[in-house]
Length: 402
Image (cartoon, rainbow, N blue to C red; front, side, top):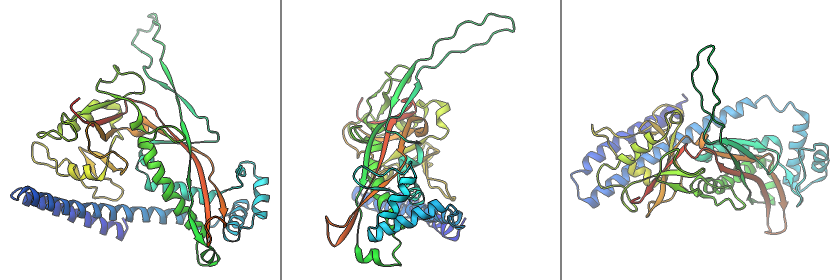
């Protein structure tokens, strides 16, 4: 554990202790005072969690840099990166076109864009994982075409026990369902002045990777959760839901559990619906399961306790350990819906089994020094898709009566 991470963990532990003290103090106050006290305590706790996450991300980035400290030993990659740098700074295309003609996999985009060098594209991908909560927990595959399908066994084969010489009865035929990825093109258009590009101390590769990854993550974050599947990934909340149990629902329909109150938790025993969600998930899927919700609801969940007075939410007080709710990791996703009538604002499940992100290999960029002078724009695109895999692997909490 680095000094920075240890300091952040200590800060989180202190903020958690302060939150518990504030929660005890708030019980004797008026409703308005109680709300104000807990909002401040929650804000401090969120800041401490963010500081820990930032320290861990910095350590991960330093580790990635250390792995590449030996230099780029592949001359083709080094040549590509050098030519791309000249293209970014000066708009020189000749060297880059020659390189991409020699490399079939680095196809020139139809509108004149160029593929990012592998090292920069890998940095964009790594940043996307760091930023996107869904990418951190879902299955991610890379493909070379826009057409990606998977067959899912939705009922399974049967099995049984027999003696050594007994007849082997025929088992049921598995029922398969085809899943197709809903693909779309996500873009970012960061801008820099030509003066900054001419500055030899300006790290143009790092700048493009950071700018592009931030914009891609923002767009993807919303699409993986609620995207409608039209020229974009189909998010897991865009599929139908029903209150019926596993095995009784139609294929590709998620199970929802109602809170019993429109737009809110039940007045008493708020945690019951959360506990029910855990145990409605099949035991084999609970290993690796996680919660996903937005910041406002997460703040409310932190104050929930069990019948013995123990908090259901616990901070991650070791490096790399996320905070947990009922013993399962919690991921904050700002694109999860706010509480409203019949909103699906909390998800729980094994997202690796339940949702698939499909990345088309390659990120391309088009240099545009004309449209927004004195800035140079870099229109950068990648194709990405998303689809539900196992509809029994994800449960959602519905803030409604049914």
